Image: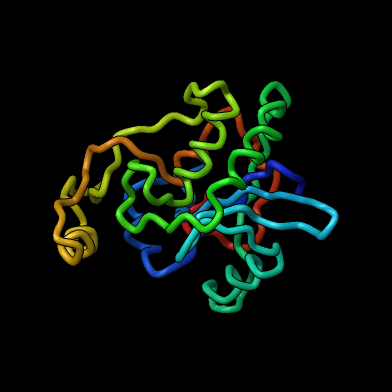
Length: 198
């Protein structure tokens, strides 16, 4: 499998792995908390992503090593989704728009106020812009609740308490798991052992 410009790269990484992935299941039950988009140019293969501390273009090998490190060194678990042919015409304009907010801060509060961006928000915004400012990947009410109990997870209560905020449960937003399940994407590759994937 060869990554190509416009492929979405999904993974489960970072310190909020359990809290983010626990509230929404992705493609075939996968637990995912990060997404970026592949960009290839004369200098090589990169991933455009919102990843702390900012929106950035990251060398693919750096992304792969980061995923390897958070997986305990056992493998490089990630999943690649490719837009189905009727929608691939959006990719060039989406990439062009997505490169503009480089260095915009990463949104640790997962809001949609555009002062900062989180990973799936960047992708949603890119494809909305390429789609004539009309939503492409839909935003949905965000959930911070345990699917089994319906209660807001303690990790999220403590996280937002640290920032002096209420948990924004039910506010519009997006997440990598939802994007991975979009029918306009074809999952073309799964590498390594992604938690929850059946």
